[in-house]
Image (cartoon, rainbow, N blue to C red; front, side):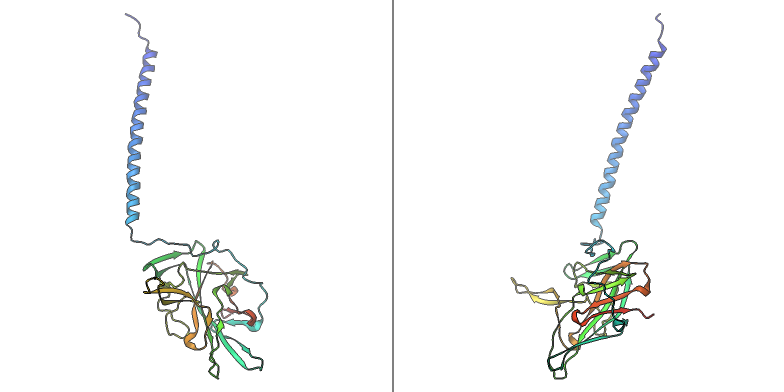
Length: 272
């Protein structure tokens, strides 16, 4: 009877067991991949069925928290440093020295939030914006009004756009950021009234008008940028301007700065 080579038998058995292990592992991987694919498909289906609305556009038009220089950072005269709720008056005279323009400007409040929901009139939906970690939204409330002249003369004045304003925090200047649809109403500002407590506060420099469509003629709500300030309280410009700034800032360093061209630069600060 031939002698059994135990080493060869052991080698063959080992190869056989290894082959079985490879086959089992392969089928296990296939089944796991099927399970993973099913889970992924369910997650996609759940996302498609969610009722939450995603943000259509980021509102920051530049890298988050990046300071900017809007104009030459010259020192603001002491007489042009005002506390919040103090009015700044500037006027113009004609060749005879008669006042033909008298405008008052005031930052009358602000609100700080890290996120907000706003209603978009175009889509008829609500959208949400959340500030990046370490950042917040600073909403400055500003009012600009041109007084009626004693002779009843209606004087119009170019309206300073949002780009004429900045927020100085810890010796850095930040420019306004804008919603994708500037006419949108921020829900956090519901029941927040304008300077004269006439209507809820809206974005500064923008209004919504009902304008007939060029093709159909049917009036539609259209966002309009206001460019002129007309005389009278009913024509005053009032609204909020949004800034994105670091959350941990020194409140004593805060300045809301307005650039009124040849009429000067003014800064509003919190009472010290």
